[in-house]
Length: 379
Image (cartoon, rainbow, N blue to C red):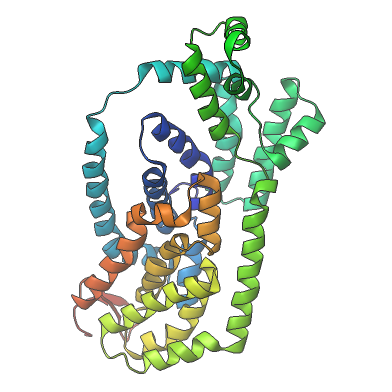
């Protein structure tokens, strides 16, 4: 996620693989999804390639790398806290024994299902490489799809099969057939594929692989895409009517302290995510409304951009009808409210940021010469 700047790409590639590994180890899916999202959004938040990491300072009037340095104050301690939490939770599963028979069965079934080789890494590595080179998202993804399609054609799949796989997703063939077979038919299939797997284990593993591999293609994302459109339309109407600006304006008039100002931004970003349903709107709208207030109090622009990211970027994925929450739930196959308690970084970071603001730790002030200085009080 740090190298690509995209939490969505990370969850849709490495995240899905980790979900499968965790399932084989007996780790609950909601816990795995929450931790995957925590890691993905940490990288997204701190990467200079991330769209939100560039948007927040642009709205606040800060420099990109000044913004990232400011986020280290709040995100760094939060990451350490989350790491400790994950280690403690991991100890619960560390004492368990791996099911060697099931792992062997999954490996054999995967080899029977696919032609596994190093070339299979080419499409995802190409997408990651283009993203690292700051190539636009759509051409980068299209290049990955094109290379994967060529590789599929070389392996004997026709154009119709490739288009169906892109639109409807890959459908497991051998694994699903094994999962649905029984008795002598199942034994014949295992014998013909030269698999040394017990029939009961083959049926179980076949079902697991079918669920893991058959995740749907473009068609499965239509619900999420329609929700994105609805959220954008609703958010645009709310901004045009000035509803949120009126509400936040009344809040800023009551704020007297740095902690209160940061809390107002963090709360406004969460409310924007809740009612507007889009991560970008939760950065742009509060950023516009609080920019002049931060300038009047002498706070550096990077303080505003940090608050925007600490809440706007991270809390979006905790809301089921938000575009981020809908996407992650669809990709990882876990309901938003099920993984939300385990997305530790996403809800602890705003809390840590707020506590540090009230404790006056890591507060940047803008001096008359235009430089920023860290101090408890305005110089």
